[in-house]
Amino acid sequence: MADAVLMTPREILTGFSSVNNQNVLINDDEYLRLDPAMRLFYEKVRENLGVACIAGHLRSCGYAVRALNLHGRNPSDEAITELIRRERPRFVGISIMYDLHIVDAVRLLRCVREADPSVFVAIGGAFCTYNAKLIAERIPEADCVAFGEGELTVEGLMECLAAGRDWRGVPGLWFWQDGRVRSSGSPKLPDLAKEAWPARDLLVHHRRNGIPTPVASTYTSRGCHAKCTFCYVPRAPGVTAGNAWRVRSPADVVDEIEYLQREFGTRFLWFNDDNFGGAFQDGYHHAVGFAEEILRRDLRISFHCEFRVDTGLVDREALRTLRRAGMASALLGMETGAPSMAKRFRKGTMVEYNFDAARLFKQEGIELEPGWIMVEPGTTLDELWENLKFIVAADIAVSENPFSFISRAIALRGTEMYDKIADPMPPELPDVEGPARAVLLEARREYRIPDRRVEDVWEAWSRVSAEVADRKEELPFVAQLIVDATRARRTRGEPGLRPLLSRLRGWADGLAELLVAFLNLGLLLADENPPRLAERLETELRALVDAYDRRVLGDPYPVFVAETRRLCGEQAMAG
Image (tube, rainbow, N blue to C red; front, side, top):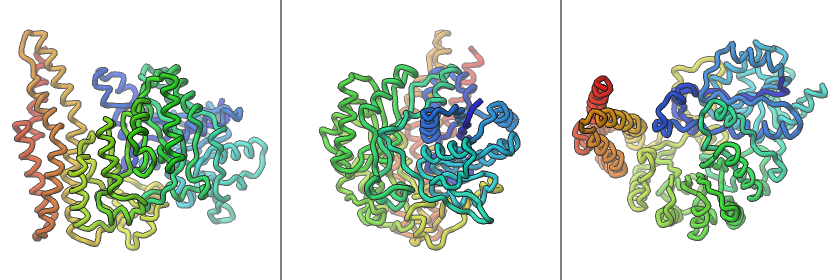
């Protein structure tokens, strides 16, 4: 039996874009049936680090905890109710990391209530941090909604439940009392120097079921010193000017990496820090100190992290040290090539910093993933031209999927951007009903850009670019079909289908060039501003993409793929 059961819901698509979805398209059983070569394209979901941290913290306090991550699994209502009846927990925590979790979170909550109406149920997670009051109002079946960092909040709840004391004084909660929703105040922040390591229940589950575990997630710090208007981290509950960015010791992080390598064979780490590079010299010394500790112990690890261009890490020696320690890639918060947009974002940096960072990353051989916002509530056509000119001059359209540059800021509750949208449009939620819909209707604000030309350009760009991006995601599977069919042909002494593979590779390699032409076409037509701009631009963009496909593949992409599937299918049947 467990004192606490912690659950991460499944992703359920809601009908609009999310900033965080991980797109887990198959479950664990389907993954195990894949050809090993194809598993590379179905990287298993990152852990819910929030739940992992709370589970590790509670276990360090002596509690028995069952942590269940439903990514890649699809348990029935009956399986959930049976789990609760079997474990008989005193406390159940349901983590909503982001908007796509909320539909399944409501289902899990109702399953728990059916299994044991008396069990204490709390909802928490990153999505709750800025929607806690709203969720408490709309989902009263939960006893409370926790917000902010949850380790000490959940520990306080467990202590009160065990002692039979009133739990409403535990900081960091919203709950119903006397006919209205009340708060117990901001949460207390844990001392990261004393925190237990995140629990690894998901990795244990995967290892037990024969799923490789070369990838794990952890963190070296929490928080960020910056004030970006599109980000809610600056308003994190419990944070003050003196503790906006807090760190673990480099030695402790590297000790944890050694444990992950020893127990799970970890070869790649996602660092989930809000700002791995921290603030100025403090950030420099912390990150470089971590890298030097990796090198001192001669560990072999690769990792990805995220930081700003104004940290001390955009420095040749710092980047070189980090690369030697294993930093294979980094998301860098560039956001824009237009100075006026950077000013509205309150980035506190200059576009020149972005250019210098791109140059240094290229020189040091580190893969750069630019954090980029092409369109936001105040974007003008001139600013879109500045964005395009920067992308070309800095040569940054060489990421894994160049069409990810066509992005629109999402105004999330808790951000300054959300507060400034005076006349929001209702989001479209065609497939969401009940309390989940009520929450999602208020958790973000849709907006229309004042310059109608920009809105029209966005409409056409987003529609056509989504199709190109989907094709890029499909490409590895088409390539695998060709490889399998080629192997089958060679066993019969027949020529393979490698020329098809070369065409696919050429198509992917030319996407950066296509992106620039795509953006250029949109802006040139917007300058002309013909009648029915969005409709005409969409037609011309499709013609541009079609011409690119024909030049590289010999046919429009859908025709090429259909013909490839036919050829490969025939080879499979012949084999």
